[in-house]
Length: 255
Image 1 (cartoon, helix red, strand yellow):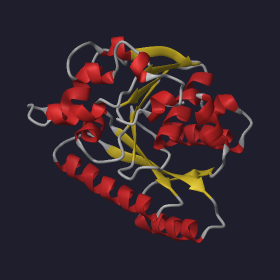
Image 2: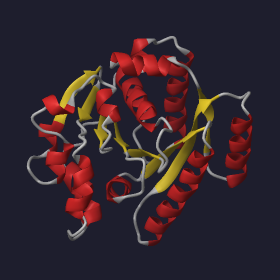
Image 3: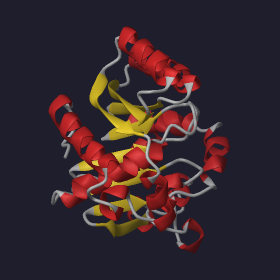
């Protein structure tokens, strides 16, 4: 299980998460994408309208139903989706006064995810209770850094500090890798961020995801890019990332 995160918004984590899930599915395996982000971007990227669903992950987190009721099966080949909702923002308020509030997602997933080869959690762009729930549920974190935004690097460093704090409290979690997204090697911002990431010592994936309009075209169509345009350079980058994760991750049944 991998949490896809960065406390900075606009890094493209939902795009990466949804396309990685699609790659797992196209390779004949099963993936579950869990959308805990109140923006529900991963959900809409599959063309799903949360308001049209009888149950979402919000209902699971507040105890109104079990996880299977909030899952829409086969949103893409081999991919099931735990549907997100803008009401997830209310969950943090609900959990704030609860005992063991950081374990609610872990408990909700228990007994329901064993059939999947890969479970991905798309996190909110912050380090609030929902993200902490994801970090307590998933032993691994994939950090997405937009190479057009200096603040995305700061977000990654803040996320690292949170992971280290959880480790000191006995939580089994580690940053598996950093993926560089929205890459344009000709930009000065890219060069500065790339140097900072290399010098940070954080585990960088070799594959970098190029900045291309094709990703937004796929979002508009409600289809992951790897299916919308399988031969796109960005789609191939996602497949290469799946390969790297499979070879570097020691605790996940990856693609």
